[in-house]
Image (tube, rainbow, N blue to C red; front, side, top):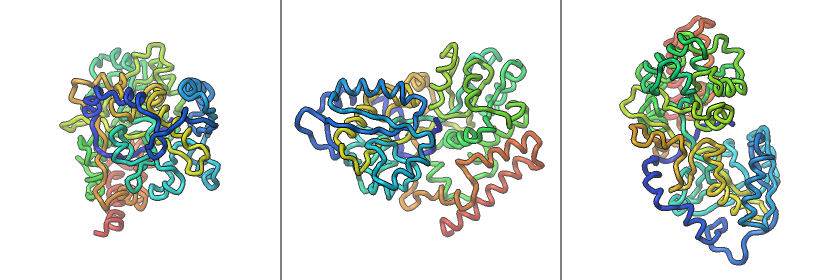
Length: 443
C-alpha cells in the first residue's frame, strides 16, 4: 500500500507519549456513543446495514472480516459489508458522481478540501475533537472535522539489521557519510544489494521526498520556508542534500546492478530474506516486509541520514475515514469509524504507523527511539494565506516533487545513461522553481 504525502499541524510524539496516562481509549469505552455531531444517543445503539469501502484488497476478505466480527460483539445489530477497490482513487472519484459511494469510505486525496462538505458528513467540532485525535486538520472545513486518520505514519529507511550487522555495521548510520559507508560495507561483503531503489516500479522513488523534513532538521522547512525561498535545489539546501544521497549511492554502484529490472513485490521478500540491505520507504512498509521475514526482528527502521543538528522523523496522517453525506445509516457508520480507529488495532498492526488517538500506546517501532535524540514531529502548516503554495509552484514548474521522473533522471545520470551531472539536474530544477515561484507568489 502506497502512502501519500500530507501536511498536518505540529505535535510531537513526546506530547503524545506524555498523555498516555490520559487513557483516551478507556474513556471512550466508558462514554456514551455519539452521533456525527457529538450528541448523546438514546436507545440500545445503532442498527442496520452499512457498506465500508477500502483500498486494502489484500486483507478485505480476511482481516476486515475479523474486524466485523469483533465490531459485532459491541454492536450486534449492525451488519457491515466491505467493498475493496483496486484503484481506489480512480474508482471512488467516478462513484462519487452519484450518491452511491458506500457509507464509510477513505476521503479521496483528489477531492479539494473546500469541496469536502459537498460529499461528507461533519464528524464534529474540530477544536473539541482535537482533544482526542491528532491529524484532523487535513479534512477540516470551517471548524468542522470531516475525516479521522486511519493511522499516523512516519518516514525513514527500512533496513535489514542482520545484513548491516553481517557487514560490521552494528549501529544505525546517522549522517549521510555514515550511511554511504555502511552501504559500501554491505557491497564489499558481497551477499546483498546495499540500497534498493525499485526504479522500475517508479512510485517507490517518490518515498524519498517524505524525508525532506529529516534532512532539513526543521519542521518549518517544507510548508513555511520552502515556498518562500528561491534556493530550493542549491548546494547545502535540503532538496540538494536529500537527492545527493540517491545520486552518490547509484554513482558508487551501491544500488541494483540493473535498476530497470526491479520488482516491488519481489523486493519485499528479498529484503525479508537478507538479499537487500535498505530501502527508503514509509513506516507502512514495515509490516509488509516483516511478515515475510524468517526472523521478524531482522527488519528494522531508522531515520533518513542527515547532517542536521536535530534528527526529526516526520509524521503524516494516512487516509482519513469519512461518512457519505448521503448515507441512510450515519449512526451506524459513525459507530464503525469510532470502533475502527480506537479499537481495531489497524493503525499499528496493518498500517505500520501509530494511532491518531491521543493517549494510545506507541508502537514498538517508535518505542525503540525513546530516550534517544530522535524526535517524531508533524510538519508545521503553511502560513495563513500561503496554503498550497508548494503544490502550486511544483505543478506550474512541472518539477514533480511527489512524482518519480526527476528521481529517475538522477539515477540515470549517476549510472552513466545520461550525459549530465547531479549539479546540472539540480540547476535545472532550481531555475524552474524560481520562475514558477515568481508566478505563484507574485514577487
